[in-house]
Image 1: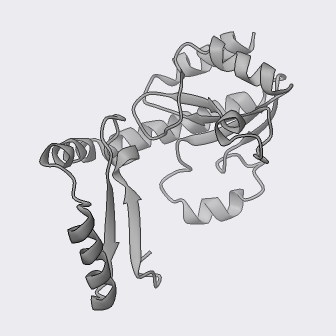
Image 2: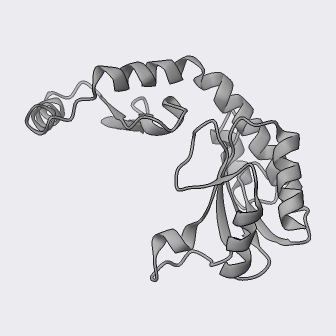
Amino acid sequence: PLDLGADAVMHSTTKYYGGHCDVLGGVLIIKNNNELIDKISSVQTKGGAVPSPFDCWMISRGIKTLSLRVKAQTESAGKLAEYLSTHPKIEKVNYPGLKSHPQHSVAAKQMKGGFGAMLSVQIKGNAKVAMELTGRLKLFTTATSLGGVESLVEHRRSVEGPYSVTPDNLLRVSVGVEHIDDLINDWKQALG
């Protein structure tokens, strides 16, 4: 992004960098821009936005396996998306790696390392049907997060509240590093 003209790039180290859902943090990379650096440094100095040494160690630990985890998670997410897109109890799968995704060609040009480990699934039915399905999944923990080694699922609309425009049958899925056969079998049994 800096090469494309951005002045700053921000990453959450809580997600994929840490990789184990056990640390909170972030990193801000600033192009050589003294005015912006001065403003950010002031906020950091006055606000105390500095991670502890232990948090830094935990993030460093996660970075060591980042490429391996992301590769495995991305491959598994693609396979899970393919499986779910053919299931009769699934209304729609949103995953840019599927050729049926409306932005697949753009994603294929921009996402050279794969299409990521996040997808969303719309279950045939309503919120109750979708939420009951999350309760039947054994390997997917119901949680609002992403990017860790464990697979997660959440009913997004119930998290967003009553004014949400998210479809009530949509589940957000973060694919972890479990074996893909186990993940697909978990969805098979949960969908019945």
